[in-house]
Amino acid sequence: MSATLKPIPALVTVLVGIVLWLLPHPAAVDVRAWHLLAIFIATIVGIILKALPMGAMAMIAIAVTALTRTLSIGESLSGFANSTIWLIVTAFFIARGFIKTGLGRRIAFLFVALLGKRSLGLGYGLVAADLVLAPAIPSNTARAGGVVFPIMRALANAFQSEPSTGTARKIGAYLATTAFQGTVITSAMFLTAMAANPLIVKFAADQGITLSWGTWALAAALPGIASLIVIPWVIYVLYPPEIKETPAATQLAHRELQRMGPVAPREWIMLATFVLLLVLWIFAPQLGDLNATTAALTGLLVLLLTGVLTWQDLLEERGAWDTLVWFSALVMMATFLSKLGLIPWFSKEMGGLVAGTYWVTAFAILVLVYFYSHYFFASQTAHISAMYPAFLAVALGLGAPPLLAALVLAFSSNLFSSLTHYATGPAPVYFGAGYVELGTWWGLGFLISVINIVIWVGLGGLWWKVLGLW
Image (cartoon, rainbow, N blue to C red; front, side):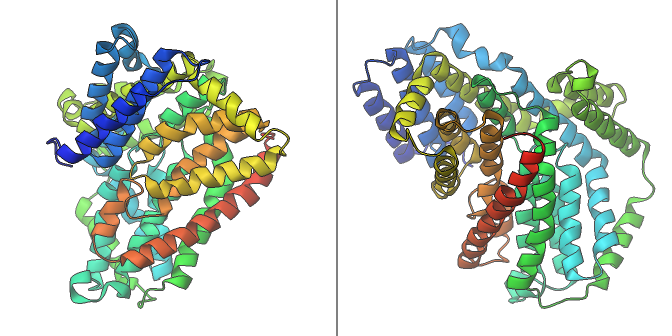
């Protein structure tokens, strides 16, 4: 994304903010809440239209909230003290260890070597690698685009399947589609698998709902695994590769693994740190309710002390620092929209409109609207920031079980990324490679979204009943 100001999107952003600021506000709403809403929506519009990079838009929002005295300077900067934000920033640093040591690449090639004798197995191999890496690599763009995508390209090239030669359907198109849709699912399965997931945790906490790492992973486990089994097969049937047998893939994987040599000491340290993090996150309740951010910082401590990561590595992790800025701004504004009474007011008003409706029916409609409205968003973060708090508040007003409502909307916040070629960070990476035509991408994306909804609501609903979520 260009760092320069884009005049027309910037003008639209400013006009949206001014119009909302000047509109009369309901008497029941604090004028500061209304002004903050104007700044918030203008920020989201600026992010969607890409008037400036997300971090720059966030800094402008922080400055405007303080400059207009909508919030004090301390309140405007309060987002930087949020522990959830530091969880995701620390996870970015840990993810750099996977890439720097080569462990992520090794894991991916191990799955290719194990499952890659047939093209269907090759698809499962790429998805399995993504699944293993997902808990520790919070940027699905870094995970899918930085680790899995280059391997997918190498495999397609090995079978001479390239868009430039008209041979994309030989196997490259199937692998690109499967790898992308796989990362959509794995992003929904772990709190630390997508950068904006902790933002959801914060919004849920504002409504008095606690989403721990373990609760999220357990609730997503059964429907997530089912989707990872079904979706590659569905793509294989509906969008089959011309090449069915792929012994060359396993040979390529073995050659790459031999080239990498034996597992290096730094890789063993990285692997041990990963296992430590999983233990700390999963067994947090048994460890005195250990904070997830404390666990992540412990893992980072190990990597720094052992030299796997250096301070320079952390300084060069631009995604982490960028996330720190925009995350802090969005969390700050969302928090004060609730504290100043706007979200509770909206919830009460919407609840009144659907009063008397059975909560299951009303909640189902609410989730579908939330899910398919992602056609209008090019950013998961923007969508979540704009709609998750309000939709969760309305769901609670309908009488939906709090934990169930928070999790279903959280899972939807990842699964809706299957829809378009701009829905999430990895989408432009895979679509931009040219293997899949636009109409096919959208058509398969919609169909896969329906299948995911059926799996997660049907099988997931039964699983959540067993877990006592509703």
